Length: 418
Ligand code: ADP
Image (cartoon, rainbow, N blue to C red; front, side, top):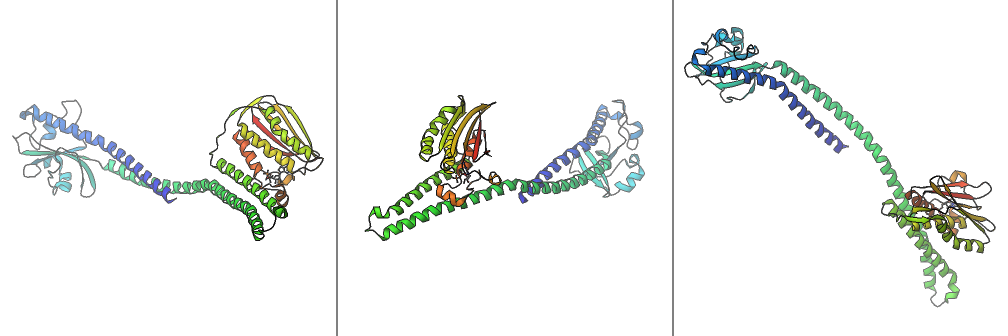
């Protein structure tokens, strides 16, 4: 917020200075042009010949300023002639009111010759002036000073400064409010994903700790009875082994998700024949299902190929079939159906198992979500399978959803673009 405030203030200040500089130079440029033009005419007339020069005090009557370009001399410009000693020599021509009120104590300042300069008379009236040396040595005039009143321009500028200051303050306040609201809005998803990440790490550590504790206990038991035979401690060893397998699956699932989060994993897209792949993956599952007294059926009607990563599609089917096997009992049936629909390929994995409660269906793709924690310990699941499945499908720009079967069990429907 503070950085935003600083950045906005700097931007507005620079912006205001640029606009201010532009306005000021534009406003004074006309006055400056008039001064230059007037000087040009004066010097041109001087150079025409000394006889053309008006006598001091008679400039406005005889001085032929207007006969060169056919227009009248600028009435805004006051001409002051100085002698070498710094005295005004044409006070009569300047006009007594102006002279007496403003110029009696006005000294000749020779520091800015031939350079248009700003000055204030009586701390009140703003003028731009141009002072130049008189090259004609035949009279007492040593310097000529042209003054033009720029009070109107100065008023516009000071009003403009006020306006810019007020606008800048308003814009800074607005931009602080906007940056506050925006940063809050921007932080929301970051905080959300941060919290999710923290929850993920906590769940992962918890899931890792449980099998590790079991393995440690079993090994300690074995260490306490070194003289016993392996056959007598078979149970401890078998349990440690199954927990080790669980750990290995868990770590590989965690790695897959961590890589998915960091967008590190790229798909190796190739043409994959859908039915062939499904048939290949289902082969071993059919055997397992039959060995568990479950019915397994295939209905493959999609002999087309899709652009996909075959390894990832294989992983997706394994996750869905693993679940179907895990959550079905004896005499249940598991089936896989494929078909083409518009521009998509559909793979349905259904079972007549325990099913998922309707109110829990929205959570099953979340990481570490398990409907029945006690049961999933038996089945070996940690609740990461469907999260990985969803990631694979989304990476292929497809969709996955779960529906409740009419009679019993669930169907997972995966749709992938052709
Ligand atoms: P797990 O490793 O626990 O199976 P998953 O992410 O694969 O994790 O599944 C999450 C949860 O969804 C499971 O714990 C289970 O409750 C439910 N589930 C997934 N597939 C099925 C299914 N075919 N039948 C019933 N419940 C299922």
